[in-house]
Image (spheres, rainbow, N blue to C red):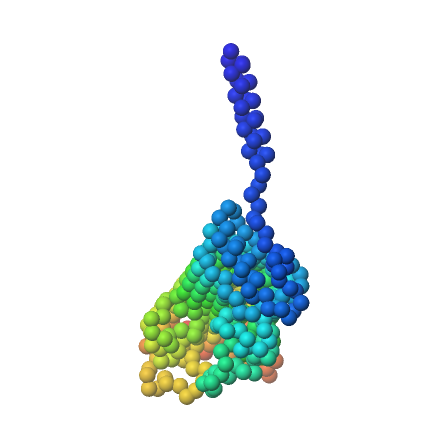
Length: 404
């Protein structure tokens, strides 16, 4: 009897295994935008079709959804994709999404905007073509109060547990990718391209974000490759190539009230090639907020003919006259920064500029194995300039440090 019971158990387990293995896998429902009425002719505005497809995919309850953009040129006016959605959504772009060349044809701040979404995945071999060249000469808001408002290429607000992979962003009108209040987001394999003289075309810009990872990404643009603004924490950047552009910038900070601390940043295995700046922290000299910038690590960074390889500027004032003499020093406290294995060449004699606030001096700045030489100058020795900064050094040090 025991042997019969054993055989019966084995048969039951076998049938259960066969039943589980034979159950059909629930695949995402695919919405091919061309099959649903979009025209890849580069002329027809497909915005209404895209938003209609998004609505159907977002509301679908029985499994995840996949929106697929095949090869072709899909002209797209300003669109917003809004959640929350019932299930994860995958947005695969293998074709080109083409923005209006005329900036006034986009009636919103961001050309393609995602809001209030969890579990969003954007991928593909396609391109977001912002057609920014016509807009760049209009970007003179620092001197023209009537300047037109130009749209960023793609924005994310209140988007969590999501990612972008392999997409190319070309010639944005202003910033390429903008993130606000985004948490647990991965960016990998992305290519961002605009000419070095295109104004305000930041590659990746973020504020009030946390737990973001940027890796294996190439950024060449006319402003910051990556701009890190108020309230951003736990950011990891690795294997990024930056150039042309203005480097990886924290700030500017301190201009507005109610700004938040920026902390826990890691930047490693990055190459800056021909950029105006490399490692950059900028705070307004007469700041309206008292915040903390802390726990930063920069490691294994190569500089190739960079204007200001290491630049802490707490007297930031891009458009003089400045108010420093009237309103005092920056109230942004910078502390606990480690710079390790930073090497390469500087276009200028000053390879390291640590210009900190007199009221809130930089504290615990740790320099380890710095080797940045001036390139193309008669006297090839580089120098460091320090103001109001305390810290320590170890290992090779070119230029010679000037820490207190």
